[in-house]
Image (cartoon, rainbow, N blue to C red; front, side, top):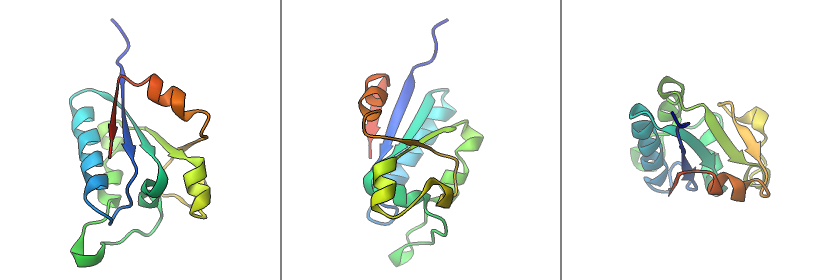
Length: 121
């Protein structure tokens, strides 16, 4: 039997800018529930979703932390974060609420190339 191919879900939007982040997380959870091997990649403003202390946004928008807390229940354990995006926002891996693997820009092309499918949010 072949190894399952990985689905890469790229999250580029901040938690309260729009519904893109939540929709991307929903796609990842559904795919994982259907047996897909899912990798999450937080890029750009998407790294803000991993910041400690997230609250509901303006106008009562739900925060993303409750959905992120469900990742382990769905066996989504490969969570990567762009190191340059973290640094640009003054964040370190130690300040995040989830175990993540930082990746550098030279690793990103290989990550995209080895994924069976890529979804950008």
